[in-house]
Length: 296
Figure 1 (cartoon, rainbow, N blue to C red):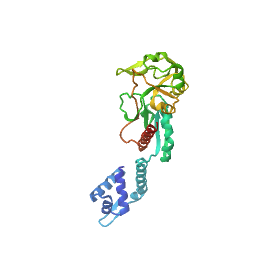
Figure 2: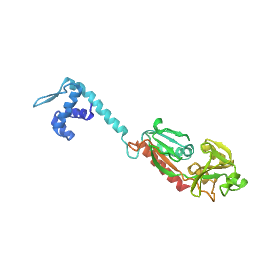
Figure 3: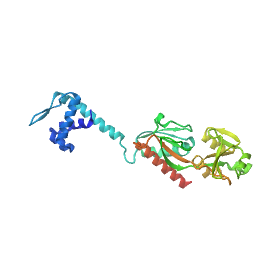
Figure 4: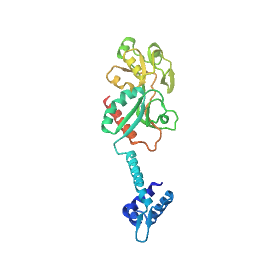
């Protein structure tokens, strides 16, 4: 059944005439008559007895009223549930984020986000594995690695360049590397997914082999190892911004190389019908990053 036909039926029932229903719905009386006829044909039953002076429900029409009311109420309820409310979010937000960024930026912002949106629930996957957004039914994925060609929709959230860092104690004991060649004389902390360090030399991206004293699949473990003075680590800014601010890590600048300028991306299945909870979350994330940038 076509819901506008059902609503037209209910308008006729409530007003008692086709012309009054037409005025209520702001349509022509002929359109009301046509919609009622289509509904009767669809149901295979006459819903009204019509005379020149009156219009009354048949027994079948009386029986159909509660079903029509339930359908109209269900439609209204669905629209109210799914329609975005300006500035607020509800439902379950399913999001995935890289472990380092998730721990350092996303998790700390959730308290204020949930307090401002009491009807919102968060299902957060903090992992460095590449997740199938569509297959896993996710609303949004935060990604830092260079994006591959995809049918997914990507929105830049913030810059997030790679950098080399280590603990002050390590520098005091082993000295500071100044060039790419100097890296050969230092212990390094390497991520399992990044076997060689990407560096930009003479405008070209190269992959530099480094001597890995520690290899780990976890950004948090690499950061912790660097803080403990176990070697040099190549991470991204938002992985270590707190440690750079409190001087538990120091950034290393190489005179003959620059770092890859990555970004934080929000990747979504589609640009159409984006749930309001996604827009609210991304707005809060951008505000949090702007606040942290000013502070640090």
